[in-house]
Image 1: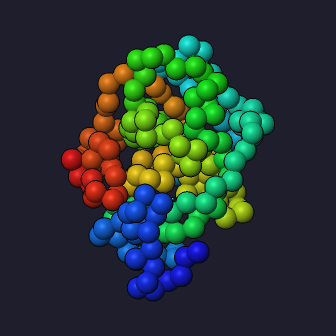
Image 2: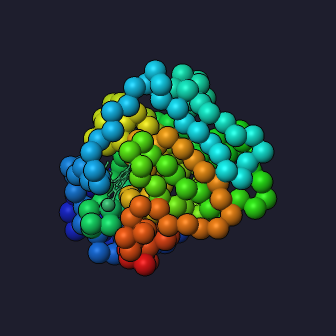
Image 3: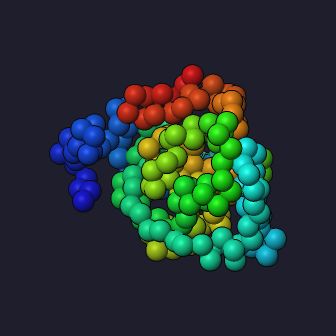
Length: 200
Ligand SMILES: Nc1nc2c(c(=O)[nH]1)N[C@H]1C(S)=C(S)[C@@H](COP(=O)(O)O)O[C@H]1N2
Ligand SMILES: [Mo]
């Protein structure tokens, strides 16, 4: 369990890395960070498209997404601007379960997340195979607010938070890595907080 104070920075993860990545500070608030304005999204017309190097492209309505088996998971988040927030309780659908619905072509090696409003971010497919990588709609028991990416955002907790796309509307599978929005402005293509992959 998270306790605030100096001893917490010495907590270890299962892989022996410290729980708090280097250069990070804990916050118990939750800063709001994004480029541009919050898109207005109507659940009646909301869609999630899963496309690219897949055998069966898929478009899900909100009701179809919510009818998928849901998972609860607790994870930490780490923002490249140096704040980290521990013990976030999320509910949503694991990325791998969506991946299984579309059947990947063997050439698929990277994922581009697409957001309402035009934001994109790239993540290696291999990075998303743990079930802690999810598309989430609920945080600490409350529906995700629009400022934090509601109705649905990506969650890639082992990478810096810019890889967790707010207002997600698409998952694209590609063969070659391709920079997303912040990656084009110099953020790292991978973004591992424990090795401080902040800028490329
Ligand atoms: N669609 C979208 N998603 C986004 C961003 C954005 O500008 N647009 N910013 C990213 C960045 S840089 C961060 S730090 C986190 C912030 O999430 P939060 O506002 O919920 O803390 O969202 C990420 N996801
Ligand atoms: Mo960020």
